[in-house]
Image 1 (cartoon, rainbow, N blue to C red):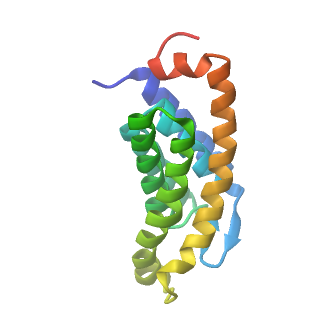
Image 2: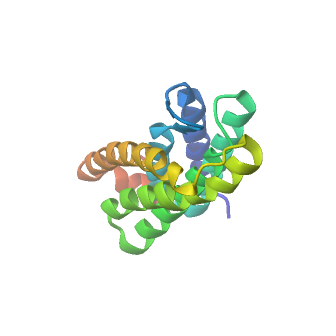
Image 3: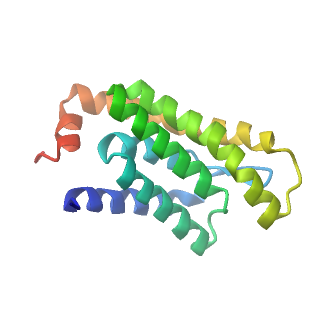
Length: 167
């Protein structure tokens, strides 16, 4: 069953991701986009894997349609949010959510981006060239969201957000 609150929050995160897509660090054909990693970790913890995946996909799609993203955003963001969400779901540890984003985007997403870069962007470099920019972007965003989530947890707001209770 679809949760109106989760759909609304996923839409809000998507809007923030699209609006903030002007803020990136170009590294070769990749764009280091720490805001997406920040949103991925928040989504993983608050929304869970499937709403988080939908948010990452919608943000990547809109960024590409508006010309502010690249095709490499899809594997990076989607792998990152899924691994982050599943690690959080099974451990309930915020640090694991942040670590999952770094591994998901920085390693899995980077290696999955390689065939896209070859096919659509004409990049012939080795797959590992995406690991460094993806991992840096994921680390910056994950660390920022980790500290925000800690603050939300200490103020008991996070628990209410995850359970869907009224603030």
